[in-house]
Amino acid sequence: MADSNKKIVAVVLVRMGASRFPGKVMKEILGKPVLGYLLERVKRSELINDIVVATSINRENDVIEEYCNENDFACFRGSEEDVLGRSLGALKSVNADVGVEIFGDGPLIDPKIIDHIVQVYLENEDKYDFVSNDLETTYPPGMELEVYSVKSLEDADKSTLDLAIREHGTLFIRQNPNVYRLFNIKAPEELNFPELEMELDTKEDFLVLENIINNVYVKNSEFTAEDVICYLMENPEIRQINQDIPRKWKEFRNE
Image 1 (cartoon, one colour):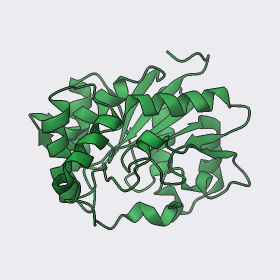
Image 2 (image 1 turned 135 degrees about the vertical axis):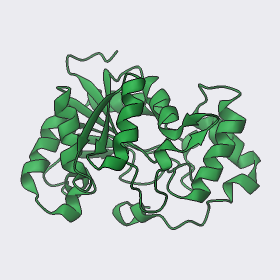
Image 3 (image 1 turned 30 degrees about the vertical axis):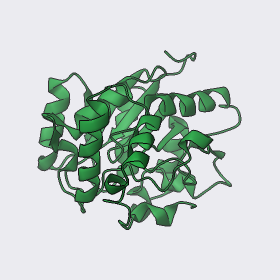
């Protein structure tokens, strides 16, 4: 548990309506949906007090809520487009003080990376409002998360009505370093592989994920990011499958 009086909550953003690969979070590998692997990873964090899955009110997402209910995970439903509002609503629904934003396209997220970034935030709450590893790409894509005070997200919620910004969650915070104190954590040498695509955004990504689950996860369900890096470096034919996919997130991030 976190050495803090504040409640630290992971908000896991998922929905069925992904434009490039609809329904990806509930696609099964070895009889378990991708969402199951993601929640299993987040649950291994030692510093997170609670987890809430944040999906939209659209009926297609009923299956996500049903899965959460069956597996004892809290589920909050909000706007499809207003991700900022949905994240904030989810965090407030469980009385969170600190939000840990986890993305549905990162089912391989390493619990150790989660804890490292949360710890940096906790040790520097007096200096930073927002700590992440996604202001600049140094970790393998799919290993990103953001940690912030819920008060900062509440402030962002009041400060912008622009849906083009709100649909990207914390974008208002990230775009206003003059208002919010931001800090980006760079990957250590052993994790500095920004060219290795570990996210789930397309069918090609799913093929890579399926290979990783079948060859890394089955050997050790508590595998690390380093284990995935080793596997992809030893199997160039696998890492090439999704190497040239255009990524929408790059427009919001320093390379």
